[in-house]
Length: 383
Image (cartoon, rainbow, N blue to C red; front, side, top):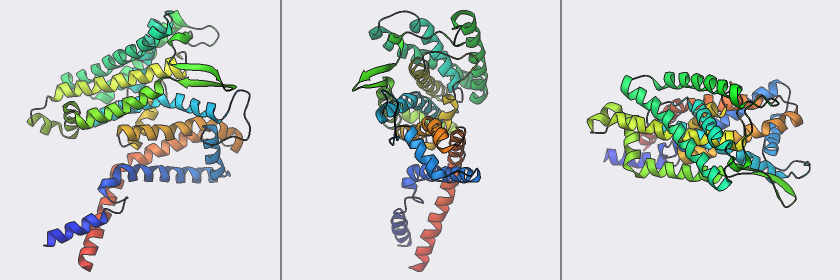
């Protein structure tokens, strides 16, 4: 009777969306976002600016709210499409990190996997002169294969030699960065921009300056694919044997091995999937959002994706929404800087704060759980 009574009290306490374990996958990221913006507001106040005005300008610059005026052929719609264009590779990159997290791995090599995939797609298809109907699917295929091979290498090193994936991915990032830089500067450099030569329009995954309704807009072809991929990853992780085994290995390798799950195979498979997603991020970035590669530079998206994945609780749908938030901050920062007189780097501060508070998710979950237990005990004593 006592246990039934305590169970009823516990169920009634689940109404609280913050302390309830049922809702913590949503409530904890929301708390992290609120805390990060409060901290950012304090920083903005300390430099003598209005944080509400700054955040309002962020939304205007990203196409969520209208600006007072627009240049020719531009509108709120064109700004919003630019936001989606920038958001597309971030979704893929964050899904790559999330899949690795589910397997108990930390893929910090997304930037390198993006660069390798983007480079091979560029030199094989971007300079080939193929028709768009062949070039665009081929770009995606190369991204999947190149990223998957690089991710699979990391998984194999982890399984075969127990090399920590953080170490191997960081080293591979440097190898990719400087080897590819060498080839670009030797064979593919543009003498004017000092970047790689621009890829053909047929190979680009973004339709640039499309004229419609007296507007010139950039249409990201990969955005719908990114949403479909997020839904597919959720299905695989929640409804298939492969997803169950990957999550089991990530939760407890020894228990998974005892249950007959092939830990090595699933480690490699998880990194292949993660690398393939990073490859899609690479081709939608270097042959979509941009049309060239800057030597000796790794994309910041590869590192922002860690914050996005943590904020989205490594859940594919959560990753989409957290990618949207971080893209708003990034895309709106230029307009915020010009209108509010705040340095553009404050957007990086906000993203960093989101990462900091998201990383504290485990601690917040523990504290909320403790509060829930105390509430249950208090109600039990009162009754």
